[in-house]
Length: 444
Image (cartoon, rainbow, N blue to C red; front, side, top):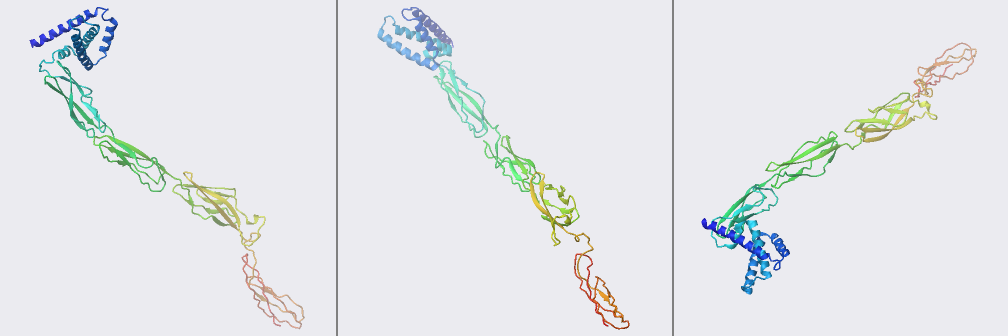
């Protein structure tokens, strides 16, 4: 231990003596200028530790060559510049690494038992995300007597698997002293699975149809993960519905995604009632218009003759009169009215139907249901004239219609009464009772 202290003391004395000697030599501006000294100092101050070591060795070699060529004579300007630069390098080395650095340069043969000191660069422990790339920041080592020492590392980090890994750093100085240090690297999974919805989002389904969900997929750095879904779609009711997909990895990270499903109604109502209605004149009621749809339907109508309720009950605003037509014939034809009915559901889908209402005539021209034309049957009694030859008109009565008879004329005396029978054919007419014609034949 005393020897070590003595060596360090002698080294300090050497360095200080060397620096002072150089400064004395440099005092002669005629030999080396102040500007040159500043230039050398600035260059040395910008060198790294390794560059300082290499430059010092190069200068010492140059100095030895120059001294061998110049002999014992006075130092030249070149040798003074070398000495100046060596002085600045010595100062820089002491400032960077202490006296140990100079000791390593001046006494490499010293045998110590102190291992280098390893300094790990960066975080320790370090954390890296699963599935990413890990780049180790390494470590440095410095030996008290030999300065910077090379460092080797061992160990790997598998970023595809969650876990704890160890990187070991080793450094051995010139005397065989080895030091080690370790870094812990934790591979963690803090990233949730990425859930991707398959198919349309938002999706649209027609009211009353069947909805089949297209599902979703998920990816994660840990490998294959399962997707579960929740939520329902009621296709019998118009509205917006949500399906939620979720996926959880082995580390408990959960990823979610949602799909919006819109149940819409774009289908118009379908008419189920006839497009033609037949009614008698002088009444307002017509009938009911119907249509099918998955939702409620309301009805409207065009024109100012017919009217309809929202429920589809159809009627005339004013009862129609068949005889009000400007031109018509009693031939069994009808008086027709046409209008357009619109059926609209609650979502605004609409369908139209052109309907015709046919109005029939009731009765005849005077609308009396008890009159009409036709033929009937009846019986008649004939009273023959007296013998005086005076003719009398026979009468005939019919049970259904009115019968008429033809009377024969004769001459003679006395009175005789004969009953004759007349037959007529009853016809069918508009009236309830028809008028028939009977023919009676009398026997004299």
